[in-house]
Image 1 (cartoon, rainbow, N blue to C red):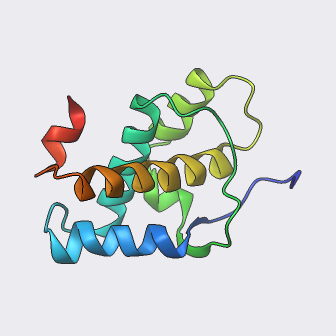
Image 2: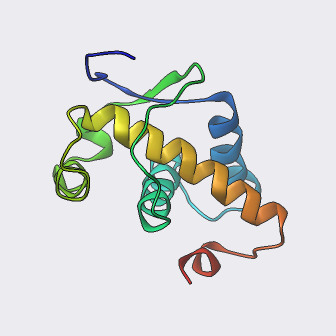
Length: 117
């Protein structure tokens, strides 16, 4: 397990495919970062326990551009107080959120508002 936080947020191949599906195919979001933020929020709301992405990732976003106000990182520190690597946690929540969103779409969910209920 790495003992240093990441400098950039990455996506797995499956995550990249889901982001493309949400933006390009379904048109739920105009930008990939918006899909990533939604996936992170969905992961938090779903009660995903802290972890780290095991699969290889490709760098996508700077944490300062993905979370310019620092509010997401502050939320993660409050909700996951034992976390010492908030960027790795954010990356994990995005990946797990995207995985769950893809499964719900495959099960027939029609839009992002259905995922909020």
